[in-house]
Length: 502
Ligand SMILES: Cc1cc2nc3c(=O)[nH]c(=O)nc-3n(C[C@H](O)[C@H](O)[C@H](O)COP(=O)(O)OP(=O)(O)OC[C@H]3O[C@@H](n4cnc5c(N)ncnc54)[C@H](O)[C@@H]3O)c2cc1C
Image 1: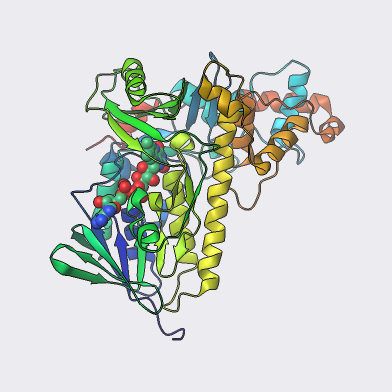
Image 2: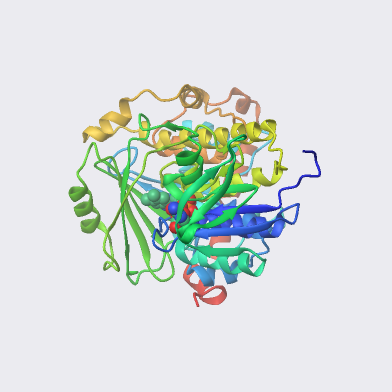
């Protein structure tokens, strides 16, 4: 086979968020004009959660030509400017991990270093006061980012909260219009080629066979092709991320304005999410079954949600970790079939997006060159590993000692990559981003400081700067942010005017 052996038939197994994101993207962007068929089972259904996202989703939507207002109206979505963490570093403490940066660099030196110097002198506010997104989030306000780099509004960075079911439906409509063929049915059998070990076809009830050149496994936790048929292997991370269960339950909105941020509240054996949408609030308790019973976790959730329940609590089980290989023979795993990091930083949908982007960048022909699959595995492995360390940081950097769960995560041995980062930051607030990792300096600064990892010193280069000029610049930033926020509409006003749910 040679370069003129393009992939002609793509089969997507699964119609959850991963399946429909892949279908919508491939139908539009596939380089070879291949057919795209998606198989999903209404009987099995989808995982049905996954409501909070991070800013790169805007690039995915833009790539598909999706209009923001139409998308938010169709998914009952709201704007997200960050995550509020409650009781994480210690009970009674709260902090924001806002999107966007903190202040501006001054004379090439990172803003947080200047802030640290001024803070050491005891004269500045919390670093949040220098983040446009943090101040807007606390004030419940929203305005879209400005394309003008001279405008302070260019610092706005946002993502969305949305109804995962409505998002899949929205993408399905677009994908089908772009030619994707949807087949409803349950796959009973996966046939492998005797010579190559590639998946040749999948079989539905009534012995209906669907053949393909390239298969995308979007079948969720079960990993129907990548694991059950091809045995790619799974690298477990439960020693660092022991939460393995979740109970989800939507509630009615309570009349107060919807907040433009997700809230994550640490609990006895895990944490609880609160995700405000236009028509309801998503809630759930993510917990370690070794540290609390399902019944007690459910009781905690029911006792702490704010509005009236709109459905019965739903239980989910998972094992944190990732596939050893995401691309095996002619199968690429996307979404939960590729791995799962708990939803603390809303990264799963982003990792689907990353997987699709890398697949397009390494799109194979029917020879399925090992060098392309290997590169894909390397890139995706490193994407998962970087997110893993960031999530572990939230658990480990804490003074909480009020339950066996917190004693375990506080005292556990963390990966070396995270230990190095934490020690470097604790010394002089320094940080280096590894291998294209997802979270930026600003995110690490927010979570390190929020969880109580305070730098003992600051970069000595800061002392070379004129103190008077520094004081003026820092104060100008703070006032500029306050004035900009004062002119923004509330998020509720903005939604009513631009993207109210249909
Ligand atoms: C508790 C929890 C909270 C989460 N919160 C967030 C969040 O806030 N933000 C975020 O980004 N992510 C979140 N996630 C992750 C997010 O839900 C998933 O990444 C996303 O929904 C993608 O799921 P999926 O499409 O891979 O799998 P699923 O939704 O499980 O879809 C699997 C599909 O495969 C089909 N299928 C399976 N077997 C067969 C078969 N034999 N035959 C035919 N079809 C089959 C099913 O019918 C279904 O269509 C959360 C996950 C959990 C568990």
